[in-house]
Image (cartoon, rainbow, N blue to C red; front, side):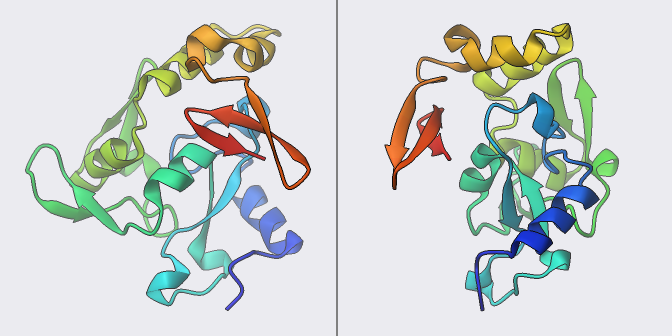
Length: 171
């Protein structure tokens, strides 16, 4: 199995997602870092790198989800499967309450908690985007207050400049 999707497969995933993150629905145009391709069910669990098993994700969701398939529903304290963007409809599991993402089902609540979809930096980002205007994207890229102390910092990895967000580097 090849863990890296081909360029063609990446384009298909991006087009299918409408160029939006499939867990938090932010568009690539509004994102600070490029979206990543997430294996909904990891190859570690013997799932292939196919269109039916891939989702568009931000670096934070991708890293926080890792190879997890389930998490604890904070309302019931029970282990529950995570939201699966390939087999489930986002609006059946989540809704927006202003800039907050609310989990409506056990899978929605567990996913919100595990992926930290309402972490300070994420809510601040959505608040800036909601303000809108032609400079919203620029304000996000240049704002250390809204996105945390390391937002906008850069590092170099393998000769490539990477943006640091919430302690993770996005290249």
